[in-house]
Length: 120
Length: 400
Image (cartoon, rainbow over all chains, first blue to last red; front, side, top):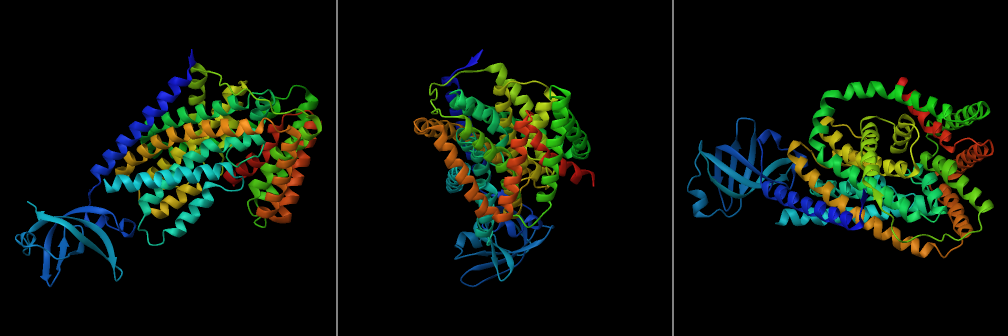
């Protein structure tokens, strides 16, 4: 049995479409990759991650500065211009889920918060 | 949406770079990988650049065969296709030779991608056993190459050619004075020698059949199977190239047709690149320059398996289509030129390139390799015996 040109072209098309679908799945599932704080490293700079952690401490100026702890490690998080809704559940020793971008400030890895919500 | 768009953009950029690296001799995806690594000092685009390198490697594994088969310009990953490929080219079947390689690459790569999960598990369990087997396979390959010669006189001549090639390989490959020593040796053994012979014997034009020939399903299945074995050997064994592994598989499987051999070589190269990503993921080891760069660019884990599969699938499909279109276009332009002129061009090109990349010492190595290959032709032994230049140093490297 011989492989026809049309079959090959069809195979290329199907394989490409499958790849694009899988890439979409990957992108959707990694819109925020769930990580533990001790997994965060320099190679993840600029990656979007989701962290579930306890608020060790916080202070508010124009921006909200948080010290997060998930039992595996600690990380500093910054929420620029937080809204009133953001501040509703901010309290020491409460658990929150934070989605944000890993960044490095003064040689320290920091989480630039995009979204956050209470986490139980 | 932003994530998929940026990943897709880098994937396409990688495919374009792979096309350039494949068509231009002397430029390898490893060189581009090093440049990509230096561009990413901030690590801010680690994942995107890794995607670019993956797609670039896959595209190059397809395109590499165009200069090898059509012009007789040997490339590091495809030079072993030069002899059977050029044989078919001289019969007017250059496009068919390229299609065989493309089909082998595509289906070999596709099956390797589908089986990525299995390979991942297998690698973790059996890495040590495989490494232990490699020296035996290499000795077996050398022995079979000698035994494949027909008469006793030819067998003795084959040993002579192998010894000369091995000695040259040991001297040049262990000598840091020559930059890109593999390029100089491969060009000498398989490029310059072939061009010289063609200049003396050929006055024909490269009249080629542009209509595509069908390839049988059975041949494709055989090629995938053997290509997977040799691609796997390359991806897990240090210091062995795709060509070396294809040769081993050829020797192990006994007499195989030129068509099947070309498909195996195609499958081997692409499978090797795809599995090198998995070897990096499973064992943290790097077998290609691209994998080395990827290791520094991004911390891959099981979470990225889906991304690797997606990149491989898209790259395989686009690479296969691009290689077919490029092959047809280039061949249409080449067939009106007298073969002798092409050979003169290739000869001058290889010599200039060798001087630029490897210097005068490289040129001396290339000319020595050419002499050994020409001697082999005069003694009427298979030119594949020259492969000892690579197999023997690798073998000694593994045993010491």
